[in-house]
Structures are given as C-alpha cells and as structure tokens.
Image 1 (cartoon, rainbow, N blue to C red):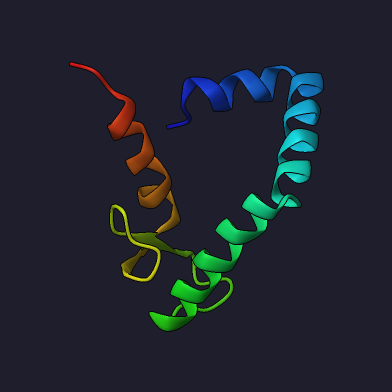
Image 2: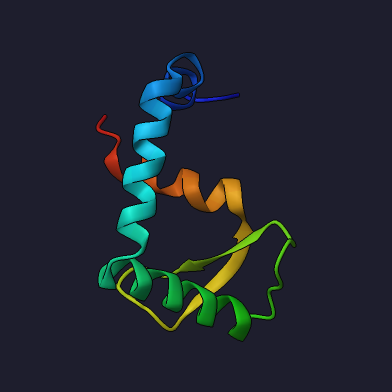
Length: 85
C-alpha cells in the first residue's frame, strides 16, 4: 500500500520532478555525502550487497552499529518517530 506522499507524487509529475531535483542536489552536499558514506560502510560491514533489497539500519545515535533489514521496513521506521497518538 502506497502512502499519501507516494500517491501525491504519482498524480503530480511536476512536483515529483522538482522533489527529485532537490534530492539530487542535497545528496551532492557534504552532509548528503556523509550520510551516503556512513550507510555504505555499515552495509558492507554487515555483509550487505548491492541489489539485495536490504538497507543498513542504524541504531539510534550510532553511525557504526546497526542491522540489515528490508528497505521498506527501514524507511517506514522514520514515520513511527513522527506519529503522535
């Protein structure tokens, strides 16, 4: 099941293009590169490989410890943090 954000970008190709352009620029900044480097290092340390469908999930507050988990589960975990009951 796709979320509200996914549905929005499917219905609005101009907005999707703008978002992807912004994301591409962000990932080329020093902060974006650092995030990518840390994720790649952890994935390699945990035995992950390109195309295995797994993401290196960092434990809270750690850049060097984590676990491999399905990409969808790892990305969904960010939403739990933002939910208010």
